[in-house]
Length: 172
Image 1 (cartoon, rainbow, N blue to C red):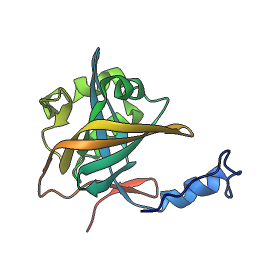
Image 2 (cartoon, helix red, strand yellow):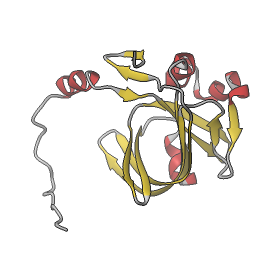
Image 3 (spheres, rainbow, N blue to C red):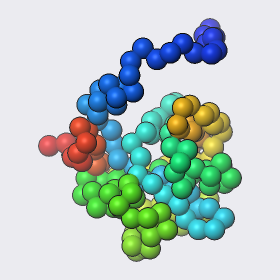
């Protein structure tokens, strides 16, 4: 196996942030709620920055803005749950995406959650779910990139909610 060494400091970006953001809007991603049981309550946010890394061992990646209410709790608790929303879950995606303040998100949707053995809240009805233990973190620009092993996962036959070009959607 070869290792690629990156030189630091990195050269200036080759594209402007606004052009990069516009290009990324044309990609499609599943819509997820990332949750964590903090020491003082449950925290969660809507995220599209979620990906599998490898199946052996089962490992995923998320990226969370360092200004998010969930950020500190991820660092402290070293665990989280990714809830892949099903195609009819646009309302909860919007609520956890910032329409509701962080402290009101779980209260409005109190009936929708179950407690996992890890302590994390998980949606009762999700397209898929991944309960995870953090194995590595890296600060990249404005975000915390988190790598985690999957401790438990589940799925349903429901199609996922997607996000592209600033809109929610589904496969047709």
